[in-house]
Length: 143
Length: 350
Image (cartoon, rainbow over all chains, first blue to last red; front, side, top):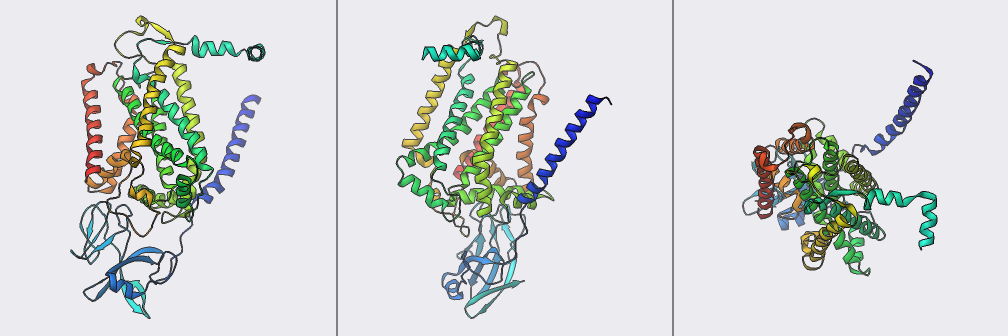
């Protein structure tokens, strides 16, 4: 390698290393940190606990539990809870009391009361939770 | 004025440049209206930059304020409604004209050697244009924008192994929230515009360097030439003013095409409105995800379509450019177009 070739390579190496030195913290800065799991009480987005009586009155309610949107259903005197995020494209599912199914408004998918996919494109069932009521608060536990 | 021009001319010799690039630059006289789509797109980019800067002066990129800032801008700031409508409807028109531009290039075979790089830069601009639309769509933080972004970013999750990480990286977290708004805002206002400008400049540079293509059929040497300025610029202006009229018909008479009822409600992360649908240019993709039973297959088909479009000049290497002499290619283009329109209409009606 002659003198000019050496300086060409040296310039390229310094440029590349400088670029890498700047790129590494930028990538780390933009990469999301793991989210903290919220508590197991069903709350509004503002963190206020949703009273069990409001769900009993309306039959179903979407709130936040474990930091994720969660659907709680009160039907035929029984409490049920599911993750509220459709496994297809992330839309929020809702309870359809007439047909006793959980429905996704985006692509019309239907889930049964056990969370399993009845029809439509979702690849996975909805995760289920066990429900306990304590002092009018709705508490969820891994099923 | 003339003295100032002479003073500048004496120092930088700009008249020679103007002559070589405009008045002395000869283009084929048989260029049809399809060749003016590029100029229409340049006009629309200018409109987007100007209105976007004006919108920035009032917009607040925080989930708690974004929707109200956009509403205040539309209702309380003089002509704020006009600026916002122009920005939103011109974005739709931009995608439409870009599709027409690409369709004309496909049919006239102008993507073929030696114009492969022009085609590739054009396809990249198309992708960037759609991404600019998507990122801008979230900014008003309405129900429509929130759920359109949720669905669009969630689509990346179907990629095997790295899908979930891709979704989190796009959103900046598990859900669409303040971090997502910050990312999309930064992309929309400070990353995409300069990137767009650079690639458009490269596209135009390549067009001048390689030479503008003429409609297929007549050998280029036999075609009469006319100066780019004023002859072809007048043709460009005719097309530009036609689309400007279309833009203002949309702005004044059918603004609801960009502002359906869900666009007038603030985002509620716990309630997806029924029958939520993306903008018309994403409807075919949205419907495909509904029709194809496997999400990965649906996304994979779209990715394959994009890759085929990008690599087209290397797949179709024949010299023939006349569309009727390429019946197989023409049939594929017509079938793809019919599929796109069919899925779009189906998605709209379903």
